[in-house]
Every structure is written in structure tokens, then in C-alpha cells.
Length: 142
Image (cartoon, rainbow, N blue to C red; front, top):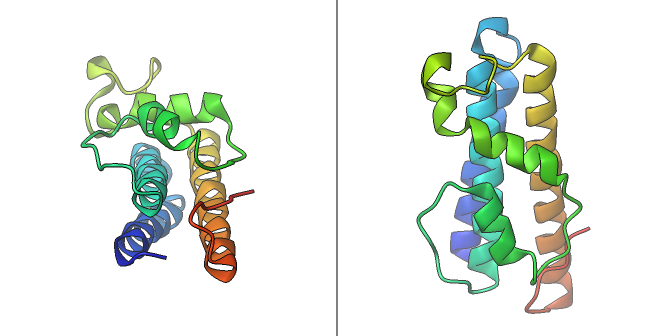
């Protein structure tokens, strides 16, 4: 695994930890969503780095996934990816400015966002660990 890949994954892990800790605070579901989105974004950027796809400055998860999809196999809920895309910037501002069509995520939704991000992170980790073992140039993620 490249050093830059490891750095992206370390930052994704930080966001997952933040989201996990925030889950206990019912009034901060928007921040759980934000950190979940960031964990997914950083996990996808780690994969982009690992397969030598030029870095692009975007927070758009669908765009990042479209770049990496031809190179790795991920078990990914596209609807959840789209939902997280919808809450990135909006999670930082009042509902009138766009935080989901109906305001802050519920605790159940926040947990779903967290779990999705955790699952993707674990897939990326496992795929890259397998890649290290096989010395293959293309990560295979389950």
C-alpha cells in the first residue's frame, strides 16, 4: 500500500471515530452524516491513489465512485451513496439552505450513514490488505 493511500485511510478512520462518538448525541445527527460522508470520500480517494488515478478536487461521492468503479469491485448501496452526497455541504447549514429535504437526519438515518461508511472503509481496508499479500497492482475489494 502506498504511503498516500495509508494517509487517506487514516483520515477516513478519524472521521469514522468522530461519527461513532457523535452517534451518542441525538442533536448532532447532521454531524454524524457529515463525518460519514467524509469517511466515504476519503476511502474512495485512497483507492484512487492506490490505482494511480489522478487526484481530483471534489467532494462528490458519485463522481469519485464512477472513477474507481472500473478498477475495483465494491459492494456498494448506490442509494446510500447518493443520500450521503446530498448531505455533504448541507449538513453544515440550516435546513432552509438544503440539509436533506426534511431537516436533520434522524438518529436511525445517522446510524445508517455511519454503518455504510464503516462498511465501505472495511471493504477498502480488506481489499488493499489482500492486494499487499498478492503483490497485485489492482486492489480487489469484496
